[in-house]
Image (cartoon, rainbow, N blue to C red):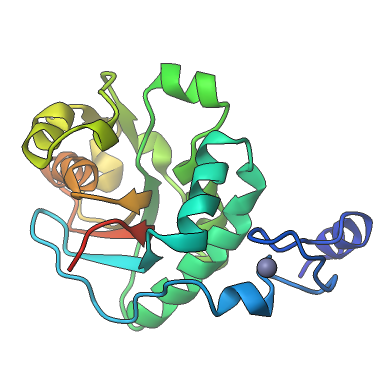
Length: 219
Ligand SMILES: [Zn+2]
């Protein structure tokens, strides 16, 4: 923990993102022990069919995690990114031991949506993951070039059509031949991650590993 972080923790002691309980100033993850045991962790590899080379998912999209992600995305709790990124970095370190990754890229929001929300929830996580894992962050390499209807309102078939061609790689030479970690918050059908991955691989990316906090898919 840096000196600045220690000072900030004294002024604004960390609180559990789930129940609000005050935590020790040395806490590096804002989850109390009582809530930690209620996180619906997924402790097995999850199957994925598509362009992705694999997917890392911390837990199920249910219970206290679902409520916290909704607050994170829609109720201005952008500070949760540290805790979500720490949970993800621990999992990524364990599951990718011995593999080398060159870039971290987040799933982009369309500019109007980002302006409305004020932040891109996946970008905040990827910035912090970059620090934790020592891998350069390169989300500027991927843009969403058209607005898409909210995926949560659509059936699986319609989700694929909805995001088809929605992403563009901006700097193909930077992604060509690279191993990339592609970050999103929640996995549902996987259509969005898959379409981002297709764009990256069309631009020459070697390997793309998806990384999400939670999965709403049933296995
Ligand atoms: Zn708690």
